[in-house]
Image (tube, rainbow, N blue to C red):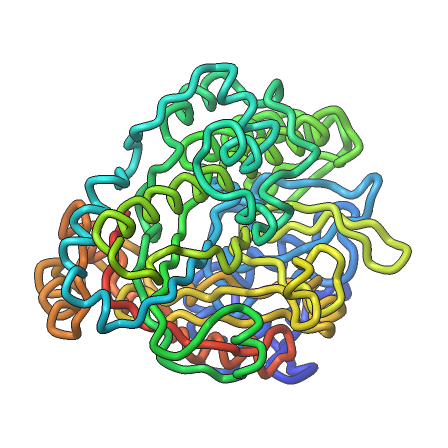
Length: 473
């Protein structure tokens, strides 16, 4: 179906939707043309049918077709009776991005780079379904699910206490209940802490090559020429199973709540209902697992750097921030309490918000928009205006421009590997086929996506990071 869009603000378009709740997209003309190639506009319109939707359903500039919601979709439902939809959160619950900053410069790490990437590939299992070096007992897994990163740091000794201060929600959602997570999900996740997974997950060693705001960059501890590490992973098989379990449950129970949706992938239940409460508790538990996974991944990266670069006093990695996407969070906007679904979108709180770490509160919450192996990634900070314009949300990456199947047809992984090497980027990936799926050409232009986010007033550019080594899932 061809949708008519009208521009209603800087880089903001509204779908002409026949009097239903509004559906809006942050994009420029070229990104709109790319978004039109799949069903994501139709999916965004479908989201407007969710009971209890408050305000507009929003699409970020990286939007593309997903399950139920488009990836890059944001929607808020009003409590207590607005719905929660697993398709509005996604299968990889609390997939997210964690940025670590060193005191090193590029020239100090360059001689060890290939050995570092090789050693990281040994320390961090990659690929779909892979288990790791840390197998949890049932009791330990339940504590991870209920407590999140704090348990991993304080009880398992994997990381630093100060990491928690710079993790969104301190790495733990209080609504979690391990009892609402199925045994099948626990079986899939019990040995996956500290594993990367497949697809677009990565550990990337980068260099800060441009600073756009010196004072804010200094507040975040970033400087030109600095070596950083960006980690992108989530809740692995456990989160996938939680989503699967509750999509099936809600698909079967919607009739009992008199809910009809235009797409069964939007299966949902009132958050106040028993089904909604159980899913929310399981989703929070899976989110805690996702933060814990990135905590262990960061610990493994720190161990590798310490072994190779212990003679350099700046090798210690400080957590800049860890921000989640694929979550639903309870947030207050004025007098209204909302359940904000962020599917392939991250929180972007502006200055002064109490949930922003104290040392960043004057500048705003860090927001990360990663590129794709051969392209840059960006550090931004949220704005005060984002709360009104986008439910304090920004996009989570460049967004796919073509499917993995099409990318493999158009790109040879072996040639891509050589091309990246000629540009000074060392790559470790389980197979050339998986590498081809994640080719930079398969993604939208990250520079354009970031430009839209900034010009729309959602977040401000602070620093640009370029890759020098990549470990791919």
